[in-house]
Image 1 (cartoon, rainbow, N blue to C red):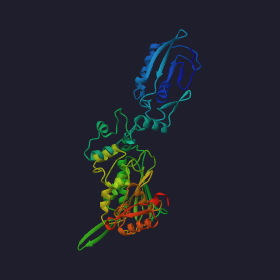
Image 2: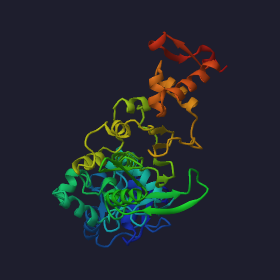
Image 3: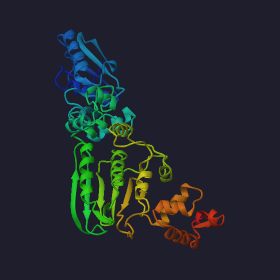
Image 4: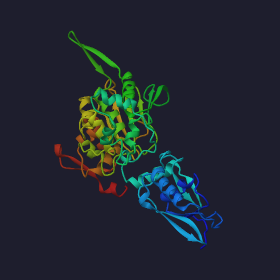
Length: 437
C-alpha cells in the first residue's frame, strides 16, 4: 500500500497540535483522509497505543471542533506491514465553516485545504461559506465575530421594559439554533462593523464642508446619535398668530426620524461601506446602501407595498416600537410635508436616496449626480403602462406647473404621447421612443 500526500490525503507520523486543523480543512473543502502512523514520505511507522490515540482523536472531533462534525467523520484501525495505523475519513461537512471551538469563526480558527497543506481561510472565504451554508438573508446568517457585547442594547431594551436575556436573544434572532450569534446580533452589539457618516455642507453643493461626524457601535446607538446630530441642524422658525407663538422646523421631525430609520433598517449590510447623511442648506440626503429589494419597484413602495431585506432587524425595531407598521413610512414622510415641496425618493442599483427638502426654502436647486426629472418620468413609465400629471407631481414632489412643463417637453421630443382628453388625459411611451428615436 503506497501513501502519497495530496489535496485529499494527509500523512501524520504522530498526532500533534495541527491535527484538528487538518480535519477542519478537509471538512470545509472536499473531504479527505488522514493516516496516523505514516511519515510524510510514506513510510509506515505504526502507532504504539492505538486505542488511546483513537480516543484522543474522537475527543478532538467532539470537543475541539464546531459545529458538530462527528457524523461526517469515521475513525478505524488498519494493519499495514504488520503495524497498526489509524485511518481517519473526513467528509465535506453539511454546515461549513467548521472551526476550532476555542478560536471561533476567524481566520485563526477556520482552515481550508490548498494543495497538500491546510491554510487559514480569509474572512471573505469564511463569509462565502456562511452564505452558501446558511442560505439565509444577511441578518439571519452567522456572524464571523462571536465575541460580542450588548451593554447599549441591554440598556435600550430595559428602558422599554423588554427582556433581553439569553433566551430573549434567541427569540429575537440574535442567536441561532446552533448557539451562534447572527449578523443581527452583531449589528446590535458594540462590535457592529458598520457605521453612519454625516456631513454638513455650506450652501447647496459639496465644495465646502462645515462639519463631519461618524457614528459607530450598536446600530441602536448610531440611531440615537445620528438623530440627535441631525436635529442640531434642524433650525426652528418662530412666528406669531395673535399672542400665540408658533414654532416651525426646517424639516418635519417625523420625516427626519422615518428617513433615518429606513436608512438603517432597510440597507444592504452585505456592503461594507457606511450609510451617508448629507446636510445642505436646502435639503438633507439620506443615502442607504443597496437598491430596492428584488421584485419591488418605486411605484410599489409609493403604493404602500413593503418587503424588508432584513426581517430580523425589522421585527426587532417593531418590538422596540421604533417602527409602527410595515409599508407606511414613505407615505407618512409625504404626509408630514403637507403642502410643502415634497421629498424625493431615488432608487439606484446599489443605493436608495431619500431627499428631504428644507420647508423654509421654496426653490430647491437640482441635485447634481442624479437622474434628471425627465429621465425619472421615463423610468416611471417603464414600471407603469400609463401615468397622469398627478403621478408626475407625486414622483417629483412638485406642483402642477413644473409637472406639466416636463410632460410637454417629453411630448415635444416624441418620447411620450397622450391618450384621453381633459381630466382623463394620460401619458404613455410613444412607439418612436421605443425605437430609440
